[in-house]
Length: 195
Image (cartoon, rainbow, N blue to C red; front, side, top):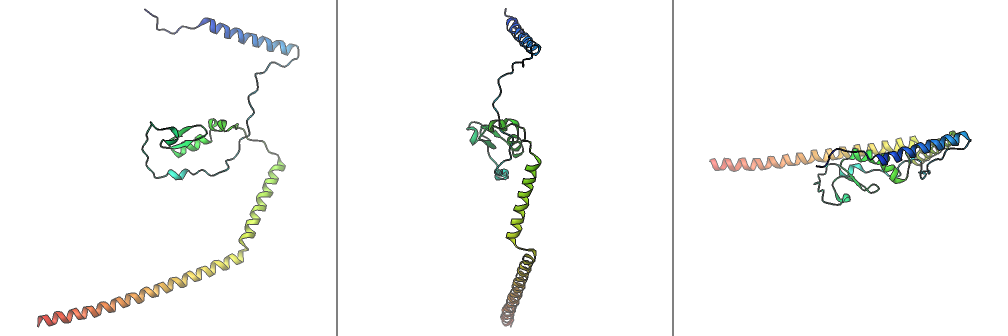
């Protein structure tokens, strides 16, 4: 009869313990003689975390019902498909969490760290934003001309509304007069039939 209990592989764990002790001994020796301890090989350098360039269109699937078929390929299943990670997320909130998450950013080649900026970079950014805003205001025109254009548009709409109201009233009066004529014809024929 075979023993179903888990047994430790003593040789494997003994080798790991010796390796750990040897590493600690090497580090102590390096400190004693003024050398730097041996470091593990450096991981590949990742880019700083960056803002997304495009807009996310999370509303495109809003209000739609889709049958979940697990036999299909990942990019054809119901839900939001991530091309970078080759996975499907079932709702927009989880999709947003996924694309902002560590795994997705790592697959994009970014770390979760943000680049430190200097005061000069912040000032330049504020200057750029201020310049863009001033250009937008200049393109739109000054406040007076915009107010005048809005006033003219409002007056034009008001005239159209009054004209439409007048036309409706005339149409109603015309229909009532035609209805009265038809009514009198009907009354006269009914009276003639009575005798």
